[in-house]
Image 1 (cartoon, helix red, strand yellow):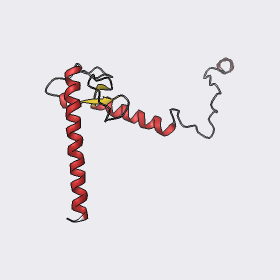
Image 2 (cartoon, rainbow, N blue to C red; image 1 turned 45 degrees about the vertical axis):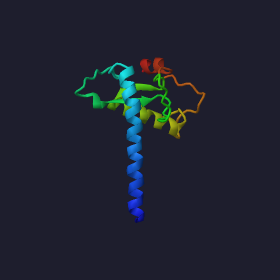
Image 3 (cartoon, rainbow, N blue to C red; image 1 turned 120 degrees about the vertical axis):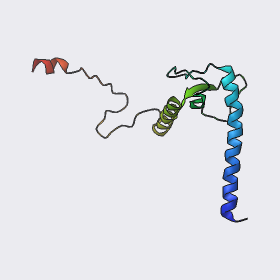
Image 4 (spheres, one colour; image 1 turned 180 degrees about the vertical axis):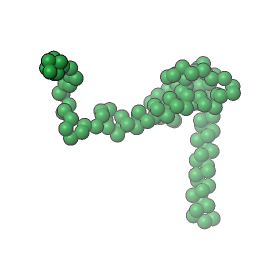
Length: 121
């Protein structure tokens, strides 16, 4: 078997295992929770249920307790948003990046600090 064929087989097997694992906890979550997005409250029916996903609160896809305590149902859009926020937080340590001219941590910013002076002008 060529190296490329072997790599393709590994990828196919990994995807099949992932799909099987997801199928198990997804089916459980759909039985436990109402078919409503936990963020935007969009309601789902059998016709659009494929757009409702299971989000792992602790971002560990192997942590699947039977009581569903690590899951929440989110629509595709809210799920993507949640993962984007998580990635952003991971990259920046929970803080927005500081620009060169930005105030340092601990300084407080008051957008109305010189409002009185501006109004006098």
